[in-house]
Structure formats: C-alpha cells, structure tokens
Length: 189
Image (cartoon, rainbow, N blue to C red; front, side, top):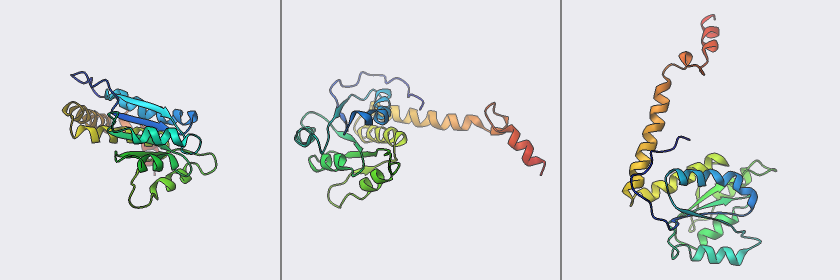
C-alpha cells in the first residue's frame, strides 16, 4: 500500500482508534491495520483482550473507550466473532470487525459470524485477513475524516495516488512486469 503524503500538521497524541485482538497470534494480521493508521498519522492503542479468557478486562476496556477519547474501534473477529460483538455491545462507538483466518475453515467461520451479527448491535464487517485489516483502518480514517480536514486531505491524496498508479500502467503488454508473452501468444491464434 502506498503511503499518503505526510500530513502538514501534527495529529493529536492521544489515541483516537482502538485496535483489539483476542490473542497475540492475531497481531500478524492486525499489524496491517496499525501500519495503515501510522501512515495517516492516526494515534491508536493496541490491546490483546479475550471475550472468553479476559471478559472483565474486555468489558472495562470497551465501556470506557469513549471516555478515554477513542472514536472508532477495530476488532479482530475470530471464529465466533465474540470479541467484536461483545466490544460493540459495550460501546456506541463504531466497531469494525476484521475476520481472522482460521486453520479449520480458512476464516469463513469468522467472516460469517461477523456478518451475521443480530440486529441492534452492529459490527461492520471487512474481508478476511490482511485486506480486511487494511480496509478497516482505511474505513476508520474515512470516519474520522468527516470531522478532521487533515485526514480528509490525506485520504484524498491517498486515493489519487492509487488512481495514478493504476493509470500509469497503460497497456500492460508494454510494461516490464506486464504480460508481453501472453499478448504474443494470443495474436498467433
């Protein structure tokens, strides 16, 4: 992911996004959310809290999130998505669920559990794994950009850089990494 241009002014130093995961092993995926938030200079906090193993600590963390200054929470959603769901149940802040890839079902269990949250306590759902972690962070930036011109400008620059990169490819057959061989083969048919 290309980094946005450096923001012109210094962002606030207190965390405004919370990133929470149920175990240390989720960090391999959630680091992509952290890197994306860093790229936009969005201050965030990271916690490992389990809905099953540390329920009291999770409930305390989620219920005090708004008072601590958080505006958005990104939650790793494993198997049954209890972490994201319980977090959402204890705060009115937006909770963005990132389904974790699982060994047994390749993350389909996490995805379906997050997407099937009962009506009334929403959890936004993103793709399984790295893409989901990155997009959840970008979505958090978009939420925050509604009230922060610095982030809005950075998000516009990021989107333009993405567009420019795609448009610069032109004809992929002429690109050094393009498929010139495929073009030649197809022209022989």
